[in-house]
Length: 387
Image 1 (cartoon, one colour):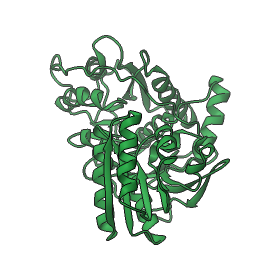
Image 2 (cartoon, rainbow, N blue to C red):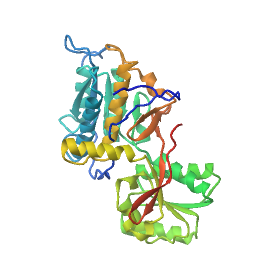
Image 3 (tube, rainbow, N blue to C red):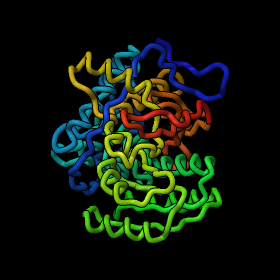
Image 4 (cartoon, rainbow, N blue to C red):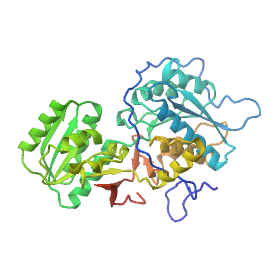
């Protein structure tokens, strides 16, 4: 099966053809491993892969948690990456998987990967682990394509593929504005996710010449949520209200909001398939990557591993496709990974639709707007097919 540029457009993308790609709601990672302080790289940084004699494959390291609280997610990502290798029957890439939850944590895994001659690192998953890996990889001149959604860890040799709240909120607000929304309110959780959601919300409402009536921050406790909801209700009716949190929190908060306009969520809602069971969420919208190809991947993953993958498995598949494509074109054996190809403005296409990395190393994605229904969701606005 070929991996080649799309002829009609300048955009380079992965021609997936009959490769099946698919959608299980991601069970959230409730406990995060403690961050590991990065240590120095032992020995001189390799200038080219340190491969065994007679082996002419580019070495790729996949750093994911294979033990500990997030082992299920890490295993799904690693299995999907191995499926990509098998699907494209490539003899030019050797994928080696390292456990970021093992002894020494993510930094130790990165050092071992570099000592083994890896020319690019896929992963890790958590932002704390990305921070630990980044200086180790940078000192060796090895790029990192991480699965984090934390925009703060991107840049300076690190590229992130995670689904970010910023892009989801921007897509939803712009669509709501196109439907006539002018006045907006929001409730957001405290912490890093809430801060990013707040910045994105304020920025995009300003961009669409809207008016923010209320922006309330809460801790994830019922009393705090009730207080935030009461303050939003006190500001009067608006055209759209954002709840920048999980479906579980949204179900609780929405039943207490005085809803006269549209309710909006974030990409977190894509991890749950029973939102419509809460009557107050029916009709709400959120933006996420399309699920069609991922649904196909799920079927094939089940057939191979007899279990459904976590939703983030798609990033393992797509990241591996990216390095396979590089090995078939610009990444010559014995040379450094060509990071210039990651900055292709035309972008790429994979399981989760089209994406490209911006100048800050953040994956820009084409998102669809979904509307919550009593039985699931329906597409309110399809994802664009090109940038």
